[in-house]
Image 1 (cartoon, rainbow, N blue to C red):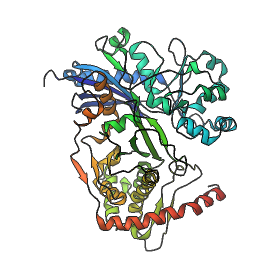
Image 2: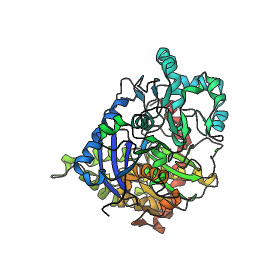
Image 3: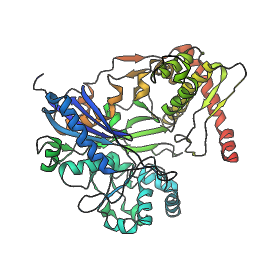
Image 4: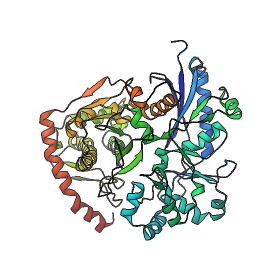
Length: 509
């Protein structure tokens, strides 16, 4: 329709800012990604310049205007998403005091020990719904306080990536949303407020943490300076936005408590909406709020997923091995190899712990390994074992949900892995559950941000109504014979872990 309303979204990702345009019924109209670098100054460090977030916002909007002017002129609101678990301090004028310490950074292990000395791990989990972990925000704030006390004293607010862009868009900093707030590990997850008790215990000031909103709340109108830079009308409503993991769940159309979303990128996670946080006795999962500010997202993360497939594609299906093969062709070649091996890869298993593991083990000492290799195994078996190994790690997450009486009847797949029919069918059988693929599985995060903006602007009365507009054109169902094979192998996969974990710890490899 010529006068159809359009939503503009910015997704601050790990490698770039995805700037997208959506129709009011959730169709992706256009998208451009503006890359920016990550600084790895030392081992375990990962930082990004927040000014790159802003420059990419301006550059991406300009590109959209040049390529799709008919859409950009119909923009009625702006939604945002961004990577979570960061630490971005700004002063009273909204200027960054330090590069953002992003989710991949693990420098704050000494601060994690400091927290453990003051708060028991199980008490910390009860308050925050999450473990004490160096990848999360709270220990990073403590590191910043300890290492840069002068800058810390100047800090007016500690933000997440998308919060910084919201502030630049509306002309004032100092807000976040519940999804991002709940993964800082400074939030009392049951009370939906910053835990003043926890912050006092570790020596941080409550006033340095931002005002908490819902993702659909309108923070303000596009300020004159930003409007001029972006070529958009001043006053355009800007919503608070949400963390990427929370946005992707709603972007996938999840709207009940029995359908889970499985995002397969370099890492992978399975998330499920629930009425309240899940305080798992084993502290094996993460809890953070949904973008509606009411439901809680229960999430289990597999540290290495698509990255393992990338590695195997490089090892087994190098471009130079096949004349005329282009880069994307090696993944097709790898799938062809894997499809020639039977379910179970002739008895071979891959333990995909290339960078340690989160759910359910939370063990950074783990390394990857093929188990059961014999002279009879081939490249075909190794290729299949890679896809199956990641699948077994994800089934571990589903097992945690099951043990906590959270049924998962089906899954919606998003991310790059959702583009592989071979892997999708394999996972359906391995999970013994049907799997559906949305129309644009790589746009789930941005669509979630757009959905929050639509709800905030009153274009939909609720997230449930918005979910009704989603389409799932592809569906996979389990192959019974394959599912039976995988049930047997999953028991073996789980049985390996105790001895293997002890071996990794003993060898310190």
